[in-house]
Structures are given as C-alpha cells and as structure tokens.
Length: 130
Image (cartoon, rainbow, N blue to C red; front, side, top):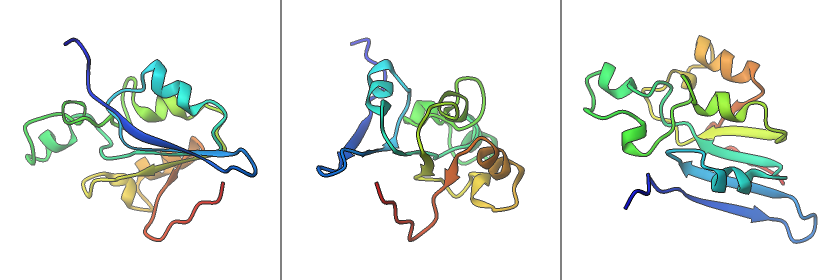
C-alpha cells in the first residue's frame, strides 16, 4: 500500500499514579498517531540510532539513509530533536544509539546540543522511575 514504515512502541502506565513512559526504539516518522501517544507522558525513550540521515552512507558503512532503514535521525530538517525538544515531557531520552552517532561522546558538540535542548542520552544501566 501507501503506508510508510512501521513503528513498534510501548506506552507503560503506572496503575497507581497514572504516569506513563513511552518506549519507541525504532521510529521512522513521528506521525500524528505516534505523537498522540506522547500526550501526557512523563518520560519518552526514543530512537537515537543516527545523528545524520546519511550518517552510515558518509562513513561508507551502508547504502541507505537512516530513514530508509526505519530510523528518524536526530539532526536535520524534521529530525527528532527539532520535533521533540519543545514537547512538555519531563524526560526525553535517546536510546538505541548506533556506535557511529557522535552523541555517545560526552564532550561532542552534538551531545551538548542535545542536552541544551533538554534531552538526554541513555547510558548502560539507566533506570527510569515514572
């Protein structure tokens, strides 16, 4: 059909507090249906696979863009940082980060830009309370 990509994610809601976390490890596009799931969530764990759409092509590691492989890049026009940074979500955390993504380096300008926009980069052992 004409359907683009597919997103598999989970919305986890605490039965006591009613607070939710949304887990989106692989997202190609932030469609209206996906954005609707972000309403009133306290924490978003979102796909941070690539910084640039053509990151893997630039490095000679793949012949497809991030979007073609089902991953919305962080930077660039309509990237996830641009689309998500202003949303009223307490914690926005990038997960599923490829080893080519410069945000893994704590002193990288890309990492600092993410943090400047109120977003976090997940590290091994991260625990989140909702």
